Length: 226
Image 1 (spheres, rainbow, N blue to C red):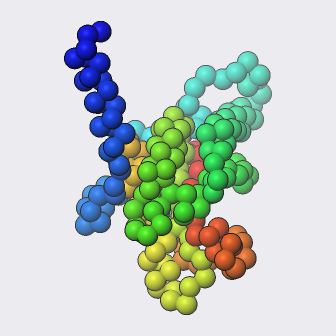
Image 2: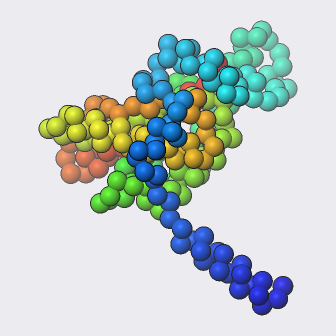
Image 3: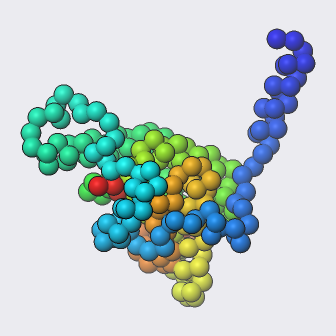
């Protein structure tokens, strides 16, 4: 490798490290989020969305790969359930290993997997934009969600307790949509997405100074497509 090649590679690496992600102009968000559903991810909503999801190349969880030797015996329901449990367990473990950072957690809720991201771990403190650390985290999550793509996802934003409930809803929806746009830009199909802003509903901590920081969060709930 000659000197010119070394300089070029060094410059490219430096330039790449200086490029910070910024959310696109809000006026364009509807283009990125075309195909997403702006409602709670209920069973009825998932059932209605399944044909659209399949039409965009989606697959159900039983189409995700070969059966292990232990899964090849038994009735179809038992085999399908074993595939589902194994798939979602692997997803949970991979996310857990990748997100060992402050302000982040991965939890299991039945067959679903829930990622909880405190707002300050993803969003800039003084401006409504994704922080550099937040972009790094979302990039990691995007890669895993693209790998485990036989899932629907609900992206829900939450705030702390606010007197103005309309403002709380708007702020929480902004967070959820902002994450959805990032995912759409990183090859995650919007046919998998449900996006909601829940304002100050469902607090997970006390409404004191510390608890408020925890209640300002994004939850990404992943459920198997079936």
